[in-house]
Length: 376
Image (cartoon, rainbow, N blue to C red):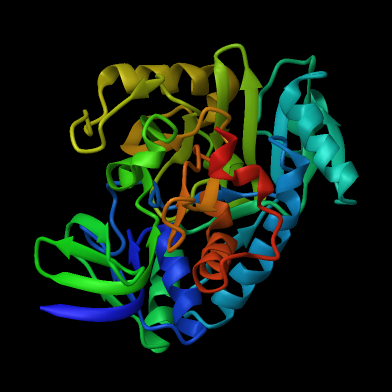
């Protein structure tokens, strides 16, 4: 079977679903291909809750994209039958003068964001689940919170379907090639499809489809824990803003209890294990659990009760931890969104808009210069 589309999107996770939605709403005849279910738990777009925050310690340059992402999430939620965004505030904490705290403060000040500077004692008085060393400090920003990723994907897919998109799950892409007319042919284990344009949003599998990404976007095994709080009231959403914390053991992040039992948290770059996404240890181990439990016992002791859940996911990291959003110089009909380095999901709504711009117009009004592939 051969069908012709305006665009084919490889991967229907957070970024792919948003891209398909934006393309279809602009009138494009678009096909989305996903090797697993929609949504699924094998990549980077699952896990019940995902942080969204404006106090972006990584780089203030991300804030304008985030502000657009917030608007697009609100628009998506308005047309969906379930809440997608829970605004409970965000905390960035660490030793006084740490990169995390100072970066968060800098983003707030450069972009005129409301924030509060809190001492460790202030933080514990207001939110007693946090028990940090007395010389630590924190930035509280009220616009932060969390998204529910599986429902965000469902909402984008529903919107895409309503606009006429075709999405095929359980269909593995074998490969693609450029055609003589400047388009592409995509071969799956079910069929062959032709299109004018191709968008690769395949997460940890992106470099398997694009040689240009080899060695630039690298999959990494990540593990999250959900522990049952010993003092449940301290870990309800109204009492426990989402957080990032810099400690000697590494940089950690976490959430209140929501959706499933347990207080959720993880360590960025968990055990720093690069993997093949098709061949790695998906089942969490006792060593994974021990690393996370020891952290909770030290800094969130009221949350360090029995283990409720452990899950693996995948980061796909670039050398500088910034994204790749670009078209390929050798194949301008191919756009790519990849290398989100463990902090991308919150941007999915606007990434979909950017990739739709690149696909249909060849450019975007969003400032994405820092995400160009040729920087490597």
